[in-house]
Image (spheres, rainbow, N blue to C red):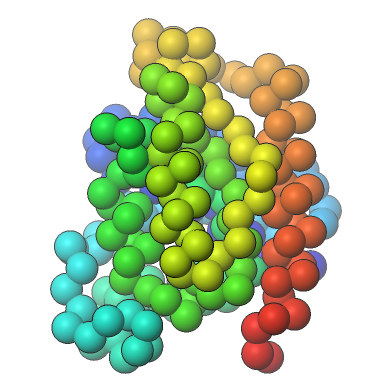
Length: 187
């Protein structure tokens, strides 16, 4: 069985992503084909990238980087829960990705996004970033629109059956790809 991290990609106060990520985790834990854990970037308090050597060298010098690397490394796949900020991903998420390299390599990712356009542009941005750190992204994704899936654009509403179906389709693809990608990594 593979391990999947559900990464909450926003750290700002009042973030909509926390409720979305908790919903994703609750739905995912109903499955028996993978282990799921919530990883909240807020728990790591990463400053703007401050490693003097590029992450691809794998020589981390800061304790916060080492802690982040240890948290990410054991996972086989990721579900990124991301808002859309100015047509892109939150700066905290981009920063957290940029800290590491080998810990991301040859793994799979899926996306759950939210925003005024459902977070679609953030996911398109994130797909390019994932390609650079050698993460294969699945096609299916889940999008939540602030106008229809949140009350007053701020409070996450209980998703309907179509969103549950979309999430399970994405997780089916993610688990299949995460399982296959695991064979590419050295034991």
